[in-house]
Length: 496
Ligand code: SF4
Image (cartoon, rainbow, N blue to C red; front, side, top):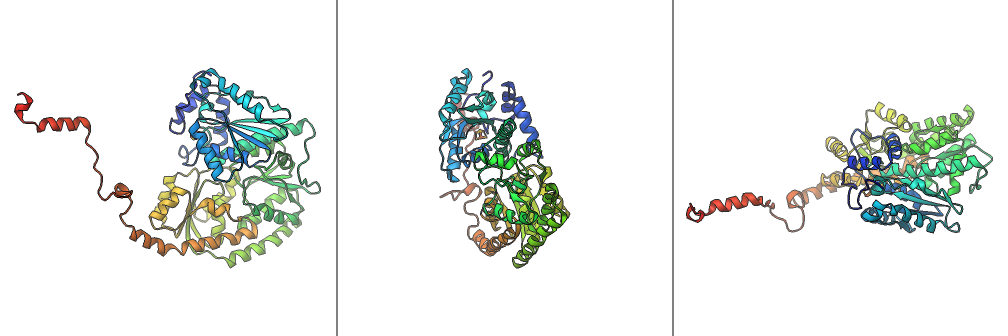
């Protein structure tokens, strides 16, 4: 592998340009161009978030009968496996280690190939996923040369470098899309395994995005009056789900960053609808769009709205929110959460998302901006913090470092992931779910102010840490010190 990068070179700290040049020189231009097209950057380079590959790893680990193998530097693999087990993965993560010699000689590819053959046991697996991290991608390790199938087990090799995929959310799409493409090509070639719980008597809708488990159930109830049912969601939980999802009448991109997955649905001839059934207006618009895309009659769409909207209106009225809130996150549902909070009565002046602007969140962006909300795509931590400092909200919802900063400023704050991943967001259930947590958090405002004044001056800046009561003085540079010493000597000692 010409121009291979050493295992201790590059990485998050090694410089994006260097890694990209190395990857292109090693034959990965097609992969990088596709990643750049699917996951555009800007206004700044890359939001601060965890290692992007975590998204792909998580999707693989959550699928039944799927083995996942990482190839990357040991420190990256340590972090990724630690995080995946922290988040409850109960599965072994395979690892193909390498060193400078195996990388430069190309032995690493042989090692990956051996590992894939060892893992591809049809009794245990439908698929083996191999994920190239930064260094193997930059070195051109050619996963596309692996066998496509071994004794009936599919082999999915993907490059998920931090210098090509901006967020872990988009890395979920990299694997979801690769699996959908594989399944679609299988379906084109002949009969495939029957999806579990196949719904054959009604057209179905496949939801794209990782959702709180109650949400698909609620969405299924919203669809019922239109004679529609739910197909398996993407990312799927087992290989057969992919066929069931591709067999839908409409795909719903409720998380708007699954560009690769949407491409596969479109290639299968499925229309794709954006936004989501969130709040009163969002649900009404979504039901209309889904119904139209599925060819449902206007009266059936009206019936679905007549069933859902009064319940949502009642839930919003019963759970009013009277607070100024800023939203920041990297889940992809930030705009949807903001819509729901505003309909419940909240004042939301700022929404920052680490994800890019896509056509599937356009309706949400337009709705929010029409209400004076500043929507920041590819938001950086600095932008989120500046908005919070400017707005001084009653509650800041955001990422871990933002929440930390908010608490230091005496602003009640809530980790976005805790807010959205532990409660429903859609339909009537979602409409009532956010109010309680907002109320509980904003009640604590006075307590936060007391804490800030109690700890005033402790543990901040140069005096951070136990026992530092004085500002540490920086040591003088060595040369200056030496010169100072020399000038302190009496003239006779200098020999003059
Ligand atoms: S694989 Fe992840 S942790 Fe490792 S260098 Fe790349 S971005 Fe950083």
